[in-house]
Amino acid sequence: MGTRPPWTTGRRLAEQDRAAQARRHGALPPRLLLAAASGLAAAAAFPPVGWWPLAPAALATLMVTCRGQGRGRGALLGLVHGVTFFLPLLHWSGVYVGALPWVLLALSQAVFLAVYGAGAAALWRLPAAPLLLAAWWVAVEALRSRVPFGGFPWGRLAFTSAESTLAPLAAVGGAPLVSFATALVAGLLAWAAASWRSGRPGGPTRRDQLRLPTALLLAVAVGGVGALVPGAAGTASSGSRSAVVAVVQGNVPRAGLQFNAEREAVLRNHVAATRSLAARVRAGRLPRPDLVLWPENSSDVDPFRDAGAAALIQSATDDIGVPVLVGAVVDGPGRFLSNTGVVWRPGKGPGARYVKRHPAPFGEYIPLRSVARRVSDKVDLVARDFVAGRTVRTLPMGKATVADVICFEVAYDGLVRDVVRAGGDLLVVQTNNATFGRSGEAVQQLAMTRLRAIEHGRATVQVSTVGVSAIVRPDGTVVEDTRLFTRDVLVARVPLLDGRTLADRLGGWPEALLCLLAAGALVGAGATARRGTA
Image (cartoon, rainbow, N blue to C red; front, side, top):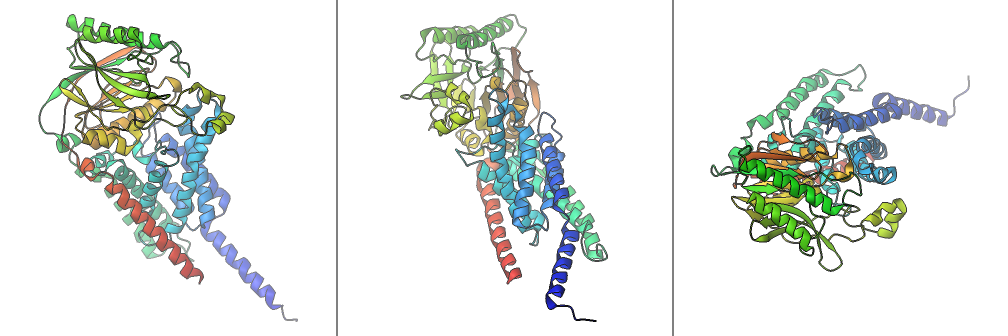
């Protein structure tokens, strides 16, 4: 019998090693299917489906698929998860502009989850992996909330949580802490699954089996920690002041990108609804409001340049007899436009103003216009770019001091926190959802509004041209809301709270510390990998 060449032995050993790794870590196609399914489940955690327990379950599935993989495979798994998550979640962005902008937006956001998957694959090698995987999730959310063009925070894990047991944590550490706690529950579930499916010869050891109940108990404990947080109203209350708020949803003549083609008609709708409100107040059918709120784009005719528009607004304001917050498109400065909230006073006219500080890229201004035009000619509907406001300002409106944010600004932690810290005792989100049809965009935005109410311990109002408009208590519960594409008026008494939650005091520190933890862990994972290959 001849002696086998030495290289055949080496080849056989290499093949055995690869086979062992395949048995331990699983083939790639099943993992890709799991990643895709987890992305769809994550999308269903957000409104309009809104099954919030799917959020930690979906993320746990993604984490498990990344375990034992290299950074390249982890990135691929994260990308697949991101694509199947963002495509359904952001479907509203293509309702009227077509599929290509929607798909490009979804893909641009999915890239961030590819980054997450690459990091998650590395972090599984470290002790306390569930904690580090959760911190890394917050870090990736922080990154995509800032870049490019100021970021796009839509789809953050915290925004599934308005009705979850973790929602009260918003009053402690803001949206980043809620995202972290949700991701930590996911990490613990993934750790339990990984322990049960240990690849050691002979199956899981006794130690592995003990990890399963431990991980599950910890997941339950973290999931219930919100019950220990005092109510948001209690942490922010400094008295018993209140105000009666009226919310006017005037509706538009048509949905879509041409919603303001009859700009004066939109204005007249809101004037007519306010006059109807005034008539019902005089008849005793509704309580007299202390302030009236109109939405973003309720006057796309500049009332500072158009005397007719100003007269219409003044007539409605005088009829109701209280200050009205008007959402107006204002000419200037220079060649720009300003998306502005203006307080209109009975008998006096315009007063304090807030200018939107974060105009939406590709919606209110067009970066790289010549390139964007190749994607969609709809960009030229934005003929003049909106300019960003530079001043943090509250709006005095009789009894209330309004902390105003406009449309997508509600998704940005710092923008909302700034106006609350500036002294606002009533948080208002002026928005216009006419360009998104009957999609889930409006209810996704309302979920953010509800979380902001808890985070800042403020009664919060979302007022839209077409819906969904809503009045929200400081604990995040909805008092009243409207249907899409109807004319409606909501009236309710709300508390005016001017204290600060712990989240207001801590500001961005919880997010910063979690990002530092994630960065340090990734450095440690890299060092561990280098030692393992040395």
